[in-house]
Image 1 (cartoon, each protein chain N blue to C red):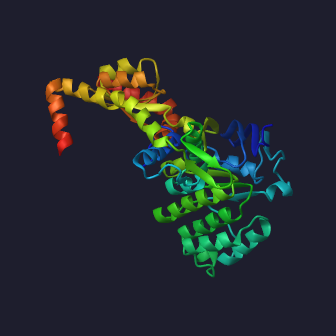
Image 2: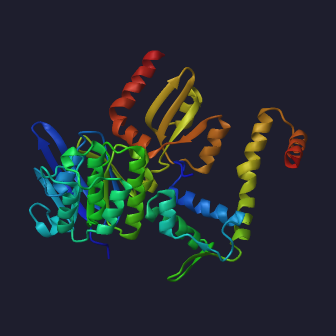
Image 3: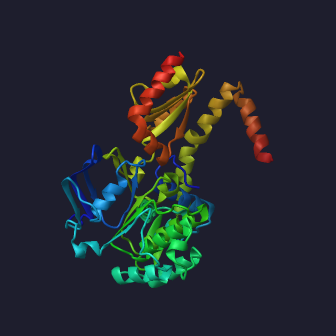
Length: 119
Length: 305
């Protein structure tokens, strides 16, 4: 779950973002506490707090004093829009690069994607 | 206002006969953080902790705990718990007696936590400590270290003889308890991969000198391993500092100290090179060894050509 590729706080933030996008954490739902995250992922609580705080700064989570942390209304839509922007660079670019290496033309690639989506 | 420093050392040095155990060690440790004190056997970890806990003295330099020299200063010593790798207990002491003495000494002692941990480690509390297995003896130390809730707790390789399950219990309970009762924890360990995610700050000591003193998160991603065609790897890494180099025929795998940005990653991909992350353990091993081993590896590589 947690690996060495980047700072843990960023990975925690991404894990929560994924749960927001997939609806595991619904809008206005309460998010587990920093300490719960720390215990669950076996990480330093300060690191967990840093990841959560980043989402608070981004306005994806908000704090209710003395109660906890909640998912902001509209957070899933905002995250989806962000991910769409990165989609080209993260997924399409490597796909077309590999395809051209293998001599797969654009039309063939499109056909393969269509077949893939059907199954 | 900066918070009071928990531990501060200035140019701390200690020599045993002709061995420099500590060489000009200057450190500042903030309160309420988990520190990893990492390094090879004989690097100076235990010497440093002994001095910080007033059980040894330095030849040169100063060490202060919450602003006081710890040596023979009782108010300071009562705030420190030091669990040694080979912790000694009075002869014929039973396990529960060790806990009872600890409860008297440490004012924050939490008896409930101690009981929970005794159950978690399945420790026979009526047995004489002399009769315990190595793992059970380590469990006694871990329980005292945790339940003391001292302002500063040093764990010096506390897991000897503990199996993987028992070590996981220790790490899990440490994170849980620290989250609820933040305090300064200094964890000295060889098993870096096991504790890496628990640490907020990493101090690496080698031959008595501090070679890394850095936030754990900042350290993550400061090195990367580049693998691929040897010539292309060389072209890509340029003048970057090499921590380690492996070669297999025309293939090279080189660990460099560098934070790559998105463009550089893209470029590596275009050159057909693989980039892989470097774990904290690898980074520590490479940093501690980089002087001698990297050079040797290079000579070997040269010789093969």
